[in-house]
Image (cartoon, rainbow, N blue to C red):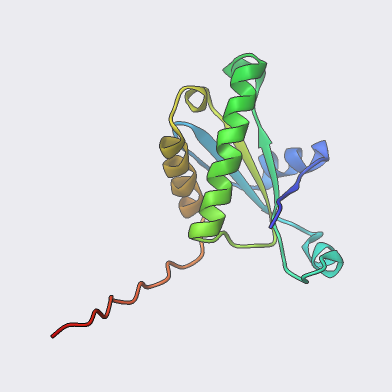
Length: 137
């Protein structure tokens, strides 16, 4: 499912001021309950609760090329995390890139993002993998 971006500056400010936060080497994550989640769920054709995600990269981390790469890598890391593990729904999720995100590999950003989401208790419970029942003789 396509992510809905946070477009209003006041929502970023609220997440920074009142949200739960966790930081790692490449990213910093802020989580705040979304008061509009119920209305967004009603408007959603599939009637699913969703997160609104905002990704920011300051000019301090580099020029436009570096900032765009960092945001692209973070967006993909969030998408993979949501698809593989699952992220709890109904929240504003603000992810801020740090300078290390511009030079790190995708796996490093993914690991740091999952660490931060785990720290603020946003990951779904791990699904138990069933043991492989092979055709043993």
